[in-house]
Amino acid sequence: MGNTPSQGTSTAETGFPSHGYHVLRVEGRSAAAAAGLEAWFDYIVGVDGTATAKEADAALAFAVGAATATLTLDVWSAKTRQLRSIQLAVPDDGSQVGLTARMCALDRSDPRVWRILDVRLPRD
Image (cartoon, rainbow, N blue to C red; front, side):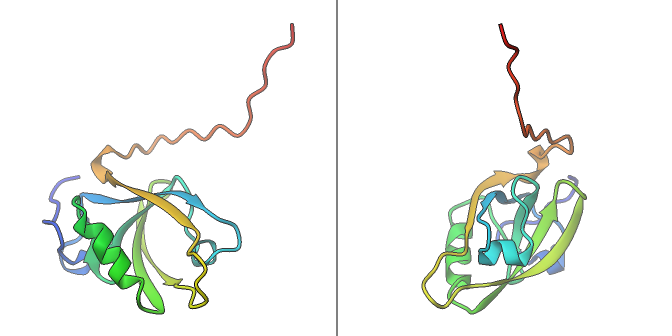
């Protein structure tokens, strides 16, 4: 991906980070769904202007940011190959955000994404 910023640097200042949270699941009618996150295609690459990092401090930054009412997430889409900024409202009623994600390297993300929706087995 060319030049990648060092860990903990601002996405606004340096451009594109090398690692991000790959969104694996978004629950229906959740804050994550309302924010427009899309499972399998979206990568959270920044939280409130700070780039996600490869180490565990990224998880800490995400948790600390969750203490506010609204998070600004920098999200890169493998489908559109574009970076966008979204607002994620953190529920104040104790409910979950409705998001499952894992840290991964973005330089390993492949633009060819296969999503198998149905498998039909031949009958004997």
